[in-house]
Amino acid sequence: MIKAVIFDLDGVIVDTARYHFLAWKRLADELGIKFTEADNERLKGVSRIRSMEILMELGGITLSQHEKERLANKKNAWFVDYVERMLPEEIFPGVTALITTFKQHGMRIALASSSKNAKTVIQLLRIEHLFEVVVDGTMVVHSKPDPEIFLLAATKLGVEPKECLVFEDAEAGVEAALAAGMHCVGIGTPEQLFKAMRVIRTTGEFTMSMLDDCNAAIKL
Ligand code: G6P
Ligand code: MG
Image 1: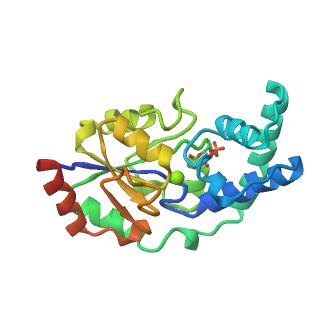
Image 2: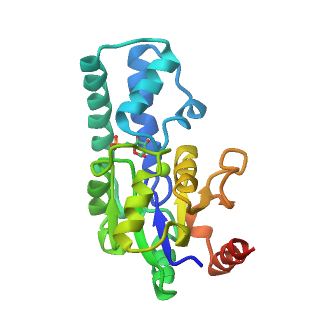
């Protein structure tokens, strides 16, 4: 029985995944590395420094630790610049209403994002009050696909992993949720997120009858 819902942030609550892509693309262009939206799928959900390493792999380049950190910080400054101009209207349609409905159904609600900017983003969007628990990239050692962040969210909520339903748009995030022993709804395409128990295009499409389906599937 699902008792808690854990949301990823970028690409699930708000379209900040787009800003991450634009900032990485800008850095890739500067470095002369070909970088497409398909390549970007590998960066979703993973930590900033791991994303930098994947970009280096894509470009076939090696860099010193210092240079790697300098460039990752440069990307982050662009990302922060984009999100600071973001408006609460950029929250995906239906998300706030969905969280409110979940709460009316007695669900516990957490946010679990690998981003070190997660708290800034939810403050800018004025949605901190929606989450009982917020765990972010500053609070874990291992980023998704490691289950650490989701297990920490469950512990803080005081629920069992098997009672949690995770909303994720990243392959690494779906892997992390499953590795935590949780159930996962994918936000995106079934081709990409085929390991999730259900895939929908956007978070706001989720309904309480889908929650009933999840509970029925878990019981089988
Ligand atoms: C999220 C995003 C990733 C991003 C990561 C780290 O998981 O999906 O694209 O790289 O957070 O974000 P940060 O804001 O700490 O660089
Ligand atoms: Mg995401």
